[in-house]
Length: 344
Image (tube, rainbow, N blue to C red; front, side, top):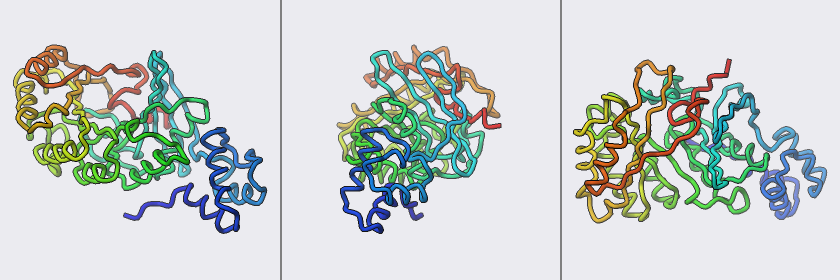
């Protein structure tokens, strides 16, 4: 699938078509990413002919997303955005006590993979976001003076199912644009092997989270139908290759579901999955997540009461594990809860 031309590529072309010097593009990039100017007409350092051309192409504003609704909790803010075609997505800002701000953004409008415990999966797949729509979520927060300390692709959709993801990563890491270090970016995947392999080659320092949720192939297929297409044992081989190539830690997300995947047998199987993989096995880390209740899924689950014991069992066996601290569940902004509930 051919990637859509990004607005930044179009801007370069407009500058060229107007026979303007290349430094005009750099001026424009600085106006956006250093001076935080969202309106093309306010960029007084640019010649009028360029400002008019940009407005004709993109409209008045640099960012294409329209904020529709926001919700706040003590340490989280959830934004509902409307896209140019009227479809809607959600993004989340997390505020940590140390002043660090982290942003959870969406890569798809809806999701077609149908993980049983995920509210987003119950909405169905509507379409992929463009690289601009992905990165404009961050632009919105940036224009409101927020610091983009870290970014995670853990919002709506499976990032590796969207070919536009890698265009978005180029924008985020471009030193003339967002200028983010790869290590400030995290991608979560349910196990799309070609995407993992492409990340390994093109963006080896980007953090990777794999949604495990069960060490048993048959149960994982029941909870996450993607396992039929990309079986767990094949994904683990791909993750081994990723670690060997990058030397980077890989996180395995594990949502704890009461009476489903929280037994001693599950803990032992997780240990068996990770031990004796090779000299790099210490770079695997289990991230245990308390299930966030939602009424949007067909299947109903409860958060596990055994999460701390499960964690202790893993640690005693020499497996690196922690219980993830979560924010925003009270406003439907936590893991697996994004649904665009206010879209009507």
